[in-house]
Image 1 (cartoon, helix red, strand yellow):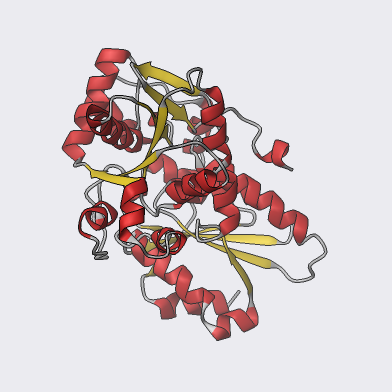
Image 2 (cartoon, rainbow, N blue to C red):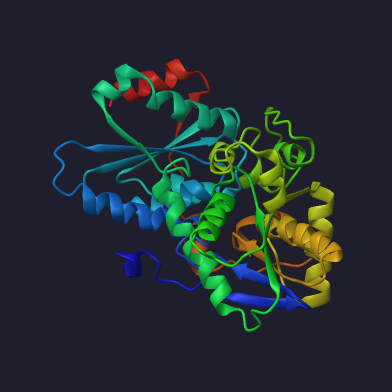
Length: 358
């Protein structure tokens, strides 16, 4: 099952000096979430093969989660997937990856933010009427089956390092904080990593907490790194629990940095010009955070996570570097398909009504 789910490479690429990129975008949908989504789909199918009722998978997405989950579960018998995404707030290519599939995949275009999509999913799970009628599960990172396989590539990254004599720090582009939580799980399983960096865009609730000790959730703000536009990351509650709510212990293991869209664009252009390496907006944030951290800690080896292929954000990337980029064929194929979605409001009663009619 593991070999079938993770049948693609996650290579470690040296960028310059003691900085490496862990490329997690070589799967079917060109995003890191292929790892967790494909593994979870096969696990769920295996353990429910004799289950008599249809299983309904609810997933909220700000971009890559939806495409990875939809493609991972596509055609799986006995399972239907409902992808909730914020209208107008995901890239065109990301949207095409989960709105054009049909079969057992339904896309729900929500008039609201990612936080609204996540709220609708969470409220559905605790609503007794819905649960009496339907068998529900989640494919978001609130489901531990999504998180555990993501710890694999942290070990794989360390395995690929030639020089293991230096301390290691991972810089993780963070939105809902599932990816960072997987890294912390890997650390507790024995991975010899000394530090983690929570790299965010201007939705910097966690970096602020790491400095002040106060967690202040707020509405998310739209940015060009849309997968990280989260104002109340659900997985941070897991991190708090892992550390028994000790701000001191969390801040000793995790350092936070946040960056603006202008800074993101600047570094995409700078790294492309200097090293001919093209980053997506999320990887750019992780790189900037890592570079800032290594200026203060030069004895570390730094690994930043490149979570999506830059072609998925070609409008932004091409504008920044001033030239067209090649769109991989497996991504370009989605652009030729017809989008099909159902529009709903961000009101839970509307979502409940939709589910009760299934």
